[in-house]
Length: 110
Image 1: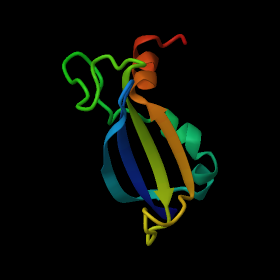
Image 2 (image 1 turned 90 degrees about the vertical axis):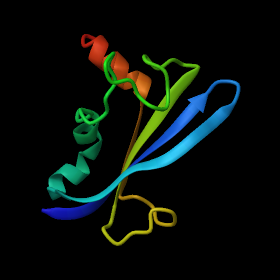
Image 3 (image 1 turned 120 degrees about the vertical axis):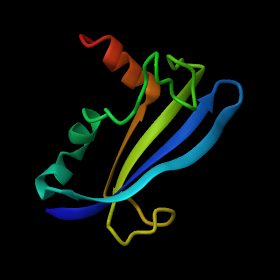
């Protein structure tokens, strides 16, 4: 197992205004198999249960459902445990929009 620092960042996009609110949502050290690090995009892509987008739990940064005019960009970066997230490059990175998660959950055949 390999220890890495998993940092999840959120950025709000509003058409006509541009980038709005930005925050580090989560910053934690996790264990991951070294083989998973090589295929991390798929591993992270299908594990979005922590992101609550439904009628009873709307996201805080964008409307429910998100739209092309108002959305939240979610970035998951994996760093070395002792990395400075503001200066060092991540080992791997994956980005998804809240609207994409909404579409996957509500249109499972797409």
